[in-house]
Length: 310
Image (tube, rainbow, N blue to C red; front, top):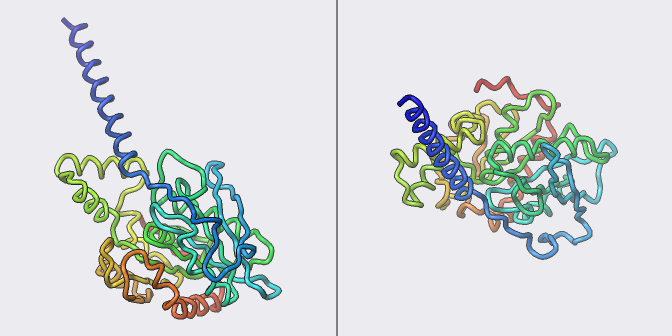
């Protein structure tokens, strides 16, 4: 009798483990970002192809990150200020191309980075906003060690998940890699809300199924949605922040930008006519973005972020 009960318990446990494993694989597959190839030869608007240097950087865990560096025509002896640009979920570095020419014209070097599982960078079992932030840290480490770059004057530009990752990095960084400014394009306020919208779009009811998916995703990425939410991290960022958001954004509502601004009184808000992508809006808004970056990069030495209370 007892051996039979033990065997039944083992069989039940194995069955439940099998279901859990299948659910894990299904969730990873369902949330996996599409890998979009670069357009042509990575030619960017207003920039000759020879103006871009293709790089392979060492990423987290020995991974390979592909990046493109563009240098201004003239730089001071101390080195040029630099901007690291991170794309959003399911995008790639070339999609951030419209920001490059205005930054170069303003005398700033630009590093365009492909996150893991995106563009030409290495694959991984999964990626996430914290992993985007890890990739940003790897790009910053490379920039700060390169000759011709003023490692004390580096800013971040990120779009959507890339914007959330930029804020996450700036919030957690203390002394090793302080950044002087963050330009957030189309950032969401709370990833749990994004996930709830994804569940609704896929007709997955939140009770039981949706709750399990959200709980499992947090376990996989190793962080709670609340801890990594831009609504939380932006308050811990000590450098200047510019929030750029489309009034007609159908992916992340404009109200998210207002919530982020309220959460960090030092943040500036630039409301633009446009949807979530913002690529077409970059040229008309480049003067305002450049002005913000020049003010931030011309200020005194970068301050380390305050200790982040998770």
